[in-house]
Image (cartoon, rainbow, N blue to C red; front, side):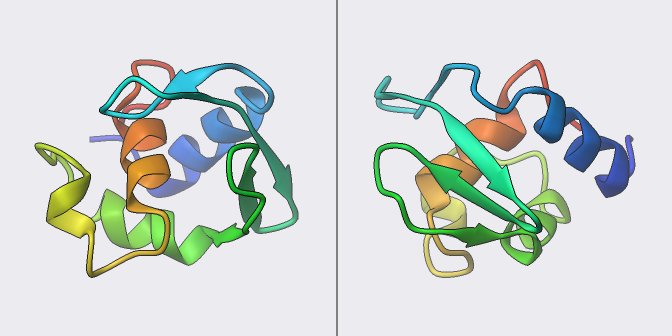
Length: 86
């Protein structure tokens, strides 16, 4: 399994690319320091939220992390995408 640091680096290279939530809503994101900001919401999701979800991978969907992380639909979509998948 890949390290979280390598996943974070891949997430950085995918900044601005289109991703899709499990319900197929398209979104892009930008990274500002240690936060990911999806264009559909504008609220920041801290790197720690991705690390928490990463530690639980593989996941079946965002519902599994709904109460654990902020922005579970975005966290799940990014971490489960082939471009960033652990």
